[in-house]
Length: 278
Length: 339
Image (tube, rainbow over all chains, first blue to last red; front, top):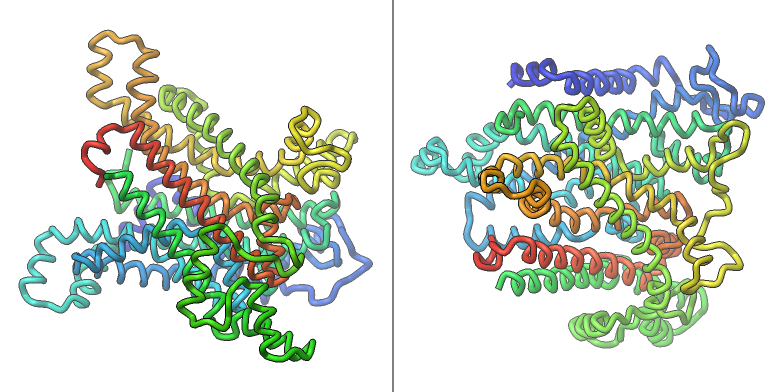
């Protein structure tokens, strides 16, 4: 397992790059509150300063340091994405594995529901839900995990269906081991590579929804990159030439974070699914 | 048989969405109907009967009947596309608002998707043949970058590029502040050149966003599926039989390479319609997504419900159409009866 991950990091350049970027963002998120504290008050005398030694990326429309906001902006996105991905993965593995093992009507109904669920538009549904439930980051992370069950369920189900034919699963059935033992002790470990790959995809989807909803003003404003874009838009500074750095830096950071996840996912996929290798 | 099965699934999906919405609006704790009645009683001093009948009219539900009767009545009306009246603009049927807004979203999303599909599949097919050229990894790299990053970030880049940054002291490429909304003042909507050009100009940035955000996926998909059909036996056989290369390209490789892509088309459509919420907000484009946001912020439940349902129906119907396309492209399915 560890060996495989090490191989994934080192065997191709984009995987390596992805790991470097992601590690940099994680380290930045951890040290930022101490090393680059946020400006809590606005400073009208310092508006739209060009980059300098004091302010590496200049200052925004309220005179606050942009770099501090960038450095502190990834933490929340990452933590929430981790929560969503872990929870979503758990739901997907349990439903997919049980559905494939039990089979019959249960399997058929779940498969039909998954198909139906996949054609309901995700983002509009979240917006509609926000009219009924007061959303915050944690609630959103949980709702996102629940909403993403269908896609994961389908991929994991088909994966388990092929695992089911293998001897060691048959042997487990013959020993009359309980179905939850088979799911968690026999099947889940063998799906590990698959799970890790889908984990990065889920994190990516979660970051997309978080930033999107923050931009739409539906999530309460904490400190993250989406909030910077939202602020730039609602305050109208997005149209000002002076604030290009304020709007472009969070945009680039989100791009980097998502690209690094995609690259890591791809290089891990190469390791765990050698048949896909070119 | 295959088509019937898909038709049944389509209707089932629409029914599930309709039921989901009914229960959200009617049965959730502190649901909008009860909150509305309470507000009427407290603020305007109406009696419970008066408030109930007012709410019945607004939500077009007869609140004095049993829940089951209400549900059936609701299904009956929604099937006739009658969603009641908007709360924010009283007296205006929800369907009228949707009919005004939906064409704009379909116009931008549809045009963007079709453009990206044409450009993307063509590029992908060419790349599959030119795998040894120096530009292949560059184009593939750009494609995978475009397919990875969220569409609204592409929108921000386009906005900055066209509307904010000044080039060579001459000002921005587009007068971004004049391009909000769907068309300019003083242009009469209708089938005339001036209106069409103006609508294209206003829709340009959303259309470009949809196009670029989908382009990468088409390139990668088409490249992959062309490469795999290049090595197929029937292509080798066709070459051996001395069939002209252009005919092999269109009839043998093209048709088979398109197959996996067509189903993806429908999935994409649903995804972009959802994403149009953010894009339309960013460019202040008056489509169905922006209207849904306005309805949500103003707690206009009938309008929200109508728009959400219309969005879902649009997605379900288009994926059904894609299934039909699939049958036309791949005759094997009809005989086998599907998977």
